[in-house]
Every structure is written in structure tokens, then in C-alpha cells.
Length: 346
Ligand code: 5GP
Ligand code: MN
Image 1: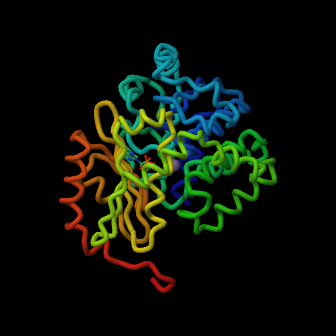
Image 2: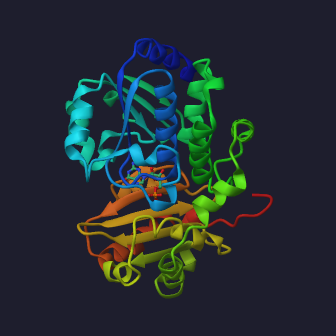
């Protein structure tokens, strides 16, 4: 943790005067992106700064309850306000992403901003050159936990009110899959316990995050598993693909495919799961693995992306059929690595 504390001091110096601050997070923001950004937003506002949260595109509806979500500036809808905020920013926080290109449409604008860039993130291989200050580790489950540590190391733990606690909890619970992966550090539970003591209602927030499916979303999940799942037993891999027509048929809304990629891993002997979703100009690829197989390595080598060892994302500019063929071609390269059986002793 030593390497984390030094930048906290330096960043605190940067924040010793009231600043114009913009908080940014990655394209297709998830629970950790929005949770960490909004927690930081409330904290910095309490500290007296002028703060905006900028997101490239809209977050899924199941995150809309997080306090402050309505105040975010969405580049796709409010490009002029985003440009103005980033032009005026003295400090730009970069949360839950490791390279500027993860900002999608906002990438160009942030590069032109004069503000000091502060990275706080937990993805592998951060592009440190692009940032003035870096708090980066892959050992911590979520950026939200890093934000908790940042506030704590700044001597401000007691400023963590219910709003901040709820936003941080949303990030921690979603990035650990409800404490089912990346959650073997006791500190994650100590932080969570502290958040509960500050007003988080675990049962209520679980329902707000996970029990908000539309009928269409639940039926899409059933369809994806029943009709669109390929299982390659030999390679311990399953792949689900969803075409634009499939999505249209279920009146797709942002966030509706969230979590689908996790289901194939619930099969015994399946160590890797892949979800292909057809977008307007590309195929979005989502990878998950269990055990020691690194989807981060596979995606980095073959599909223009990255992420973590057990969860990564990438893209393909081929058709969905060709992308499936590509995956099929690549799997034999990983046959040995994929060939393990998880057991109590492994
Ligand atoms: P998801 O499959 O949920 O979209 O992403 C899984 C993980 O991989 C997330 O931590 C996400 O930040 C990361 N990720 C997703 N897409 C990309 C990408 O295009 N590039 C990189 N470097 N990471 C990605
Ligand atoms: Mn994260």
C-alpha cells in the first residue's frame, strides 16, 4: 500500500485550494464506474470544490438510484457542457479505467484539457504516461474501495455520509459479483462493514441493483441461454451471441445484457464464457473465466481490449459469424491452459 499513500499526499496538496474538478469514468459505465465517481463527487463537494461528473454514454437504469446520478453530464446528450467543464477543469479525476481510449467519445476532449489528471484505478497495465498522478493497483476488488481508502488516507473517513457510503457499496457489490470474486481480502469486508455502519441498507440496495429486470430483460436472458449458447466442451468454453435483431426483438435497453456472460460459468467444467453482442459498428465481446485462466491475456492478444484476469472486454470488427469462427480458431492455442477442473484441492 506504500505506493498508494505517497500520491494521496500529493493529490491532497493539489486539492488544498478550492478547485474546478471534473470526474471522468469509462464508456458504458458499470456499477463501479458510477459508484466510485459519485462517491468522489459527493466527497469533493463536501470539501468545497466545484465538481462535475462526466460520462461518455448513459449508465444502465439499475444504477439510477445512486444519489447524484441525475447530476452527471452525459457526453452523448450534453456535449457542449462536457466540453466547457473539461476546458475549465484544473483537476480531472480518471476513475475505473486505465487508458484514455476507454473514454470513447470523450477521449479527444480530455487530451485537450489542461487539468492535472489523477488516475485511481484497479485494472492491469495502466498507461501511466497519460496521467499526472496514479493510484493504481490490481489487488483491490473495485475502484470504489480505492476511493474509500483515498478518503480514509486523506483523514476524512468521518465525512463518509450515507450518500457516499451507498455509492461506494454499489461499486463494491457489483465489481465483486456480490462478493463472489476478487473478494478474498479481509479489508473489503472491513470497508463494507464501515459502510453499513454509515447507513447502507444491504437488502434494500441489493434489490435496487439486482431485482429490477423488465420482463423483456429476463426473457432475453432465457433466450440467450436457450437459443444462442454454443458449448465447446473440449475447450471448457461456452459462447453466447446476440444479434441486433435478437436485441430489437426484446426491446433492448442499456444494461439488459449485463450479467448474461456470467451464467455459462455456472456449468461444471466450463472455465471460460464469452458473450458477443452486435452493436452498430462492431461486435462487443465480453469474457469471463474461473480459476487460473487469464481472459485478459487472451483479449489483449486477439480482440483489442483487456481488463482483469477473470473479466475482460474487447471488440471485433467482423460479422458475428466470422467472430465466432475467429474464437473457434483461437481456442486450440489455449487448450492446455483451459484444461483444468476446479476442485476443493485445486
Ligand atoms: P465487461 O465485459 O463487463 O464489459 O468488462 C469486463 C472488464 O474488462 C471490466 O473491468 C472492464 O473495465 C474491462 N474492459 C471492458 N472492455 C474493455 C476494453 O475494450 N479495453 C480494456 N482495456 N478493458 C476493457
Ligand atoms: Mn471497476
